[in-house]
Length: 293
Image 1 (tube, rainbow, N blue to C red):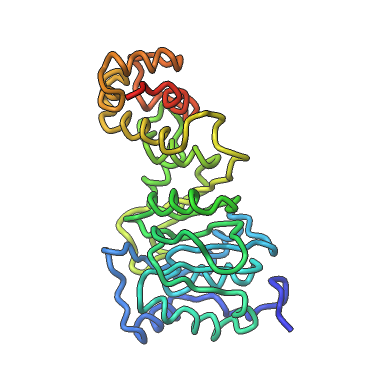
Image 2 (image 1 turned 180 degrees about the vertical axis):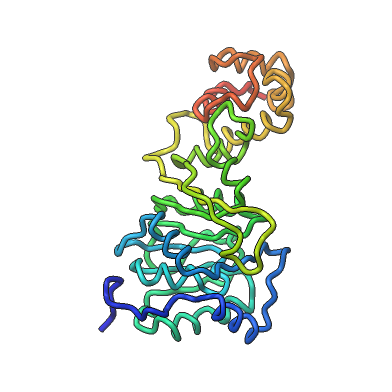
């Protein structure tokens, strides 16, 4: 007989500060800056993340970078199934045992993928409906965009990232921090800031603040005849030289400044505008009018 997420769970299933340090010591783990490892040591923060993510009892959640399992255990208490993707050899080897020890009734609802998340294009078991993760700061945006691209069944996402990155992801056109991450995330989803996280809930405590970002997938990408790759090529070109007008910034993409201007005019965008003022729909319109080369 298998348990359901609504069955009573042990009160101490989640990891506290002493649990985290004991696990790390037993495994010989020292968090590394190279992999952006900062482990959550506060159970209340874990519960807050899950609550903010709106994780439901029928959700299939994918988690990237589970580390020692702080968030994993909380997700398993709530969701139907959790698949964790971990690149670190030691952490990946230890996590199933942690789940078995602390939530034995839910262990059958957990799967581990030992891999670099940027290389994962399929997951075992049922298709994921949600992505909830404390993303390593150094690869947060590439991992997020990769997961949204390759797993279209992910309806809702809540990620914890560096506060500055959270601002960029959720920025609207016209904002000083609006850029490539903002536009590309908006291609897939409605994006918004969903809260701030202090430094003292992590071990080791990072020297930057963290933020929660909520993404709810659109019914489909913006209506356009251009492909995602074509639209993203325009976005990359526009922000590569963000201080320049689009006429100048897109000259390499179009083949010349004159060709860029023609594409912009055809798309109904001012050649004197800058990338930071455009919506994802406007970038798509420009891509539709790419000059034949």
